[in-house]
Length: 90
Image 1 (cartoon, rainbow, N blue to C red):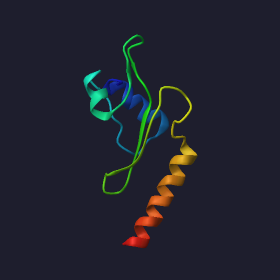
Image 2 (image 1 turned 135 degrees about the horizontal axis):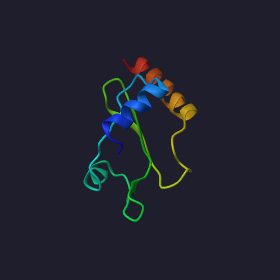
Image 3 (image 1 turned 90 degrees about the vertical axis):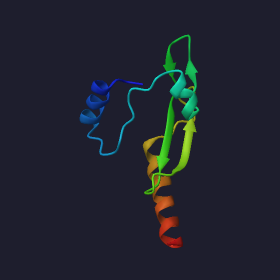
Image 4 (image 1 turned 60 degrees about the vertical axis):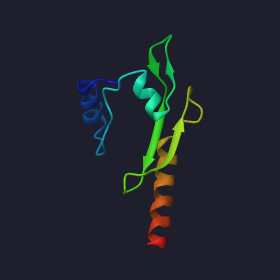
């Protein structure tokens, strides 16, 4: 939901090398991705996606609190699993 300048700040600070979404129009974009928009606090709750090399969503997590979010170690484990599975089938 952050504007472009905040997204760039995050990318620079964390040295991210993957695309980062910014500038969501809420609540309509929250509805499009299935995220929970909380009207009272005007926030979109955490929505995490893991994409494969074909840009296909292979895992997703929607959370309205800290439990159930994809953490870095889990994301890495999932990515390694999907890469291995793809290599075996390809």
